[in-house]
Length: 178
Image 1: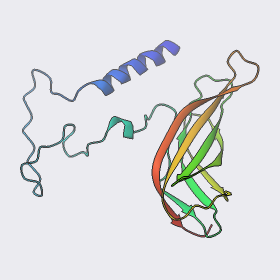
Image 2 (image 1 turned 30 degrees about the vertical axis):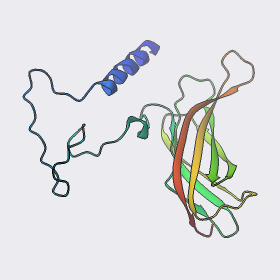
Image 3 (image 1 turned 90 degrees about the vertical axis):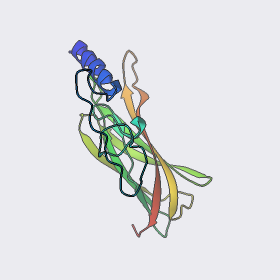
């Protein structure tokens, strides 16, 4: 089973890294027509009609990942609410437990909002955190860092934490009574 996972991972990595070029015996595709709004501009490489995205902007669908929603909320009394999703694989671990840790940064102010427990079952779940920090956040741009922290016993008696996935996103804090 382990060798099959390794093989599938290697094949998937090769498919991702493969260039999007036609085979030697295939006829070349016709050049896409330039957009009406941008005459003379070159079309981006990749799949025609699809927006060009960097590889780092997409989470891997088959591994551990954590995301952050684009909008968070802050109330007049300073309570902050953030949310997102996570996916945690069991990976044969004896402990299918993990935690989500969330840090909010706005200007020079950085505060760990805590997080919550996460279940490692391979499915995508939502997470949310709502806390009244000791510092004041205001509506406007902010940065959220979220981490999926796994606990693995391995050869140790006490499970040790390791970071399984990290999500970082520039968000907008909107005013809303919570």
